[in-house]
Length: 451
Ligand code: SAM
Image 1 (cartoon, rainbow, N blue to C red):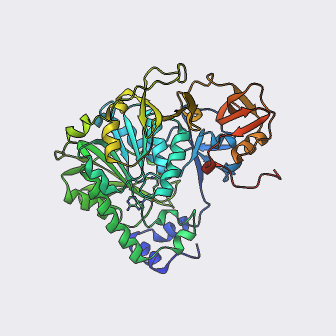
Image 2: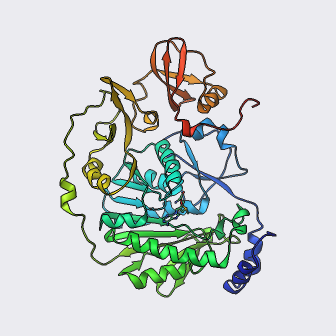
Image 3: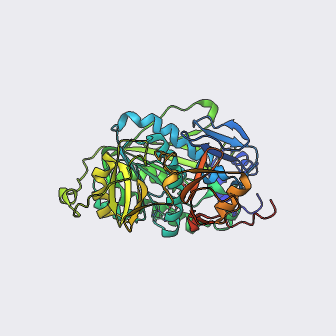
């Protein structure tokens, strides 16, 4: 790579005995990969070999045009960097440390790679709070989590310090910290242009602040997974060691398959795992897991008892194919969520800025139930509740662009649009007109006229 900063090369040369090969590895071809949704089918992709540490993860021979694949918009797969999928392997290894229905926080979650993976791994158990501090990115996270379809997810837009209001609440916390991004240099050469020694140092300081802000919200015996996509020791092993000195915690180690060529990094009593470009088939990544040994605080029971004035709400019969969902009113909308999550939702919504929780089902307007445009993506949505309209690929892309090029369906009112067997959203037939209810913010902006 011609644009690697001189200071970066200097540090790599002093950091690695095989620095020459490391730097040559940064010249290798870019890697593309996706993770398939375990509960949906259909992807229209040419899959390459499987990612060995993640079920449902696949390398791709070239980067597909995701925007023009309606099954991407249906949430059937998520483009994710292969190294990041290692989280699935780690989660499989720590399951024994966690309760059956854990409370999980993904602190820096946008655009949603790790959160969609965690949601699939939980498969409806417990609750996942998927948080992003930057508001515009939190809406992207909300879109991706909505399309992924699990009902036990809360999307929030909070600063890490806000989680101090929830002492000891979470059994598992993922801190995929903002970092100097050295691991992305191969894929995104522009990242190298933004790099500087000063910025990398600032990142390391900020990560410490984030870790300390989050730590109180972790329960005793809870697990914190810390990751970055950089090779910088100050952001990786030195921060790992720093956390071990600040808190009563221990690193959790896992067995690695030698064929994966993932590097176990031992540093002053801690162990992390690193993905280097000349060794592992993935972009740069570092991850370490900590178990909190010290006692944690408790969320005050006052909040638990907060009664917002119960309103009697009912969801239309048969809207969901699952008995376990209960309706919860939040800011004039009806959400459906598993009863276990509904029990803690008061605590979460009184402490955090909630963008979405469970399944946004709809609202009552003039005594009529008006479905939310997000409803068809919910895994528990009963696909026979509204009439279905099948579209071909071109019609589906027009729908995703906010227009309508299909036939006008018979029958008035709400219809759900599908491409192949995957649901894409709502239309409403009014007279001989079709109104498109695909959310404006989600619409394809690309020109599709000359496909
Ligand atoms: N976990 C995400 C995924 O897998 O798709 C990627 C997260 S990215 C590495 C780091 C995230 O941290 C970004 O979304 C960024 O907006 C967010 N961030 C930026 N400043 C932050 C801060 N001070 N505290 C917490 N998160 C921050």
